[in-house]
Amino acid sequence: MIFITVGTDLPFDRMVRVIDRWAGENERTDVFAQIGEGGWKPEHIEFAEFLQPPDFMQRFVAADIIISHAGMGTILSALRYGKPILVMPKRAHLGEHRNEHQLATAEKMRELGNVNVAFDEDELVACLDKVDELVAREPISPYANPELIAGLSEFIHQKSAGGTR
Amino acid sequence: MKKKRILAISSGGGHWVQLLRLRPAFAGAEVTYATVRPGYRDDVDGCDFVLVPDSNRWNKLALLKSALGILVLVFRLRPDVVVTTGAAPGFFAVRFGKWLGSRVIWVDSVANAEELSMSGRKAGAFVDLWLTQWPHLARDGGPRYMGRVL
Image (cartoon, rainbow over all chains, first blue to last red; front, side, top):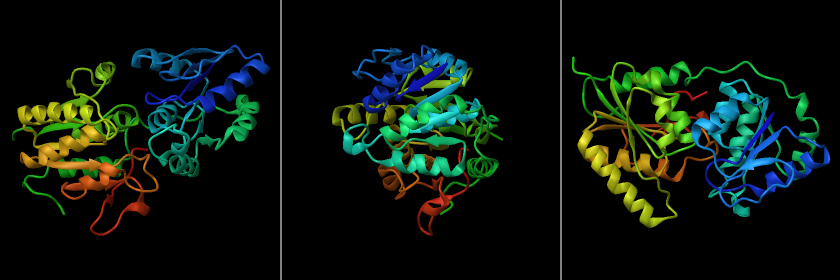
């Protein structure tokens, strides 16, 4: 099963249209998309505008592959559950997000490894044609790295009032 | 020793997922989680969980409602520490927390790999611990890098 999510904020029709056409052409019946409120309605794949968190998690955990906008919630969840993930950044100048940060997020996540990125519709088509080759990953820890945890913990448990700056 | 009281707050989606990844840092403290969607309650099963109105800077009325709800929450809890991963609701919580005597922490979202978020930049003026999750965005007198959520 391929699970598509555009996040909880705005729809991402540009991505959903490409995936829907690809699913139609390749007769894929194993695709489900969360398309966002008021999003363009796909013709070839099952979809919901919004999923309640428990339903979302159920479909997410059951999926073999995740395709989504470059949102950190989805990326972190995919890495934590060891799901291969392909992201396409939402672009603010196309009205898909409120600022352009997803471009940098996607680039940096790709550098850190484990995240596949399609920067535009053409790249997405190319990635979709090879989507079944994406393999499951070793899940990451459910928690932040130990240095960040230790630093925060130390700050929280300081005896004195006042900051560290 | 009296347990520290923590308010851990964020908006939805990635902000909430990142806040949850910080949980081991709150061990030994009394934590209240505040966020914007009732469906997140199960993520912190057994912990104090409070809903606050969501907002962003594009909707002024929602912003006002959110600010008021969070002011009441911070006033009621009087936390020793407020920690947030953003966005607007977290900004209000550290702002009001600071005014009411809490020590406050801003962890800028890992999504902000190119520049700090707008609320993160504003929060930097007064928070006690100001963190970015990208080493190249850390600087003297600016946000610090201590690690990231992954």
